[in-house]
Image 1 (tube, rainbow, N blue to C red):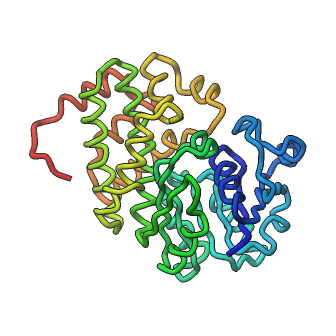
Image 2: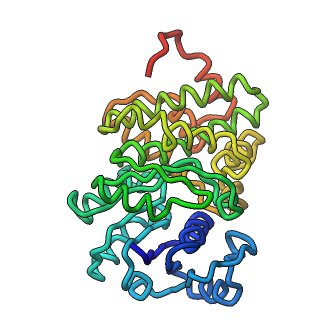
Length: 330
């Protein structure tokens, strides 16, 4: 593999494209022609990632067919809501390259994870996988140490794709637990909203630690019910991503929680955010899915109650604290 097409020029897509372009030819695709024109002129993505200059091996493109032509690997970083449509467009173009995605969440309305969408659109035998783990674009683009996981449905693809992306400041581990990596990356965003609410209400370090720990238990229960491996949730795609998103200053989902705790409406928060906060939609879809597979997720439930204006932050916290005493377990 020597040429990569990265689809989606948000902060994370751009940071990954810039990192990979330090060693390989990369085409960064964005749907908006005006955005692409601006990036070509600036040789940067000031809209989402400041003035960090693109490496020489990075080009930008607004035509999807041109972007993926001749690529050895396609890496999709489009939002989860647009994941199925981009797969359908690629299928129409006759895509045959291995396909990796880095979006995190559940598909609106269907409550399906990206790997389930990939199964439906590409089939189980097609080589595909997910890139996930504790990673802020603002730190990767600065060359700060980062470690993530690449899980694929074929062991060889997991190893080859991880090797392609691995290098410099970014350490990439490989795995075959696509389910676990997908669940960890999706549900941690809901827990980050809960962490932001806890911090915003001044509940302190004890409460945050308890929320993260029990949040991990919820994520693990949910993932294992879908067929994930328990050990995945102890790694980068599980605990690692959860801890970062619940505590990091760049976490959009934690910021949503912080502002909700201050009394702001969800509509005004999202309008001012400027970026996608996947946890808002994910909370609803996770609860929909949890009811079907009969998995208890009290934190996710209360976050969803708050997001849908059925409870205040104080009422949601009171409901969690008022739950009956029980044995600690996953």
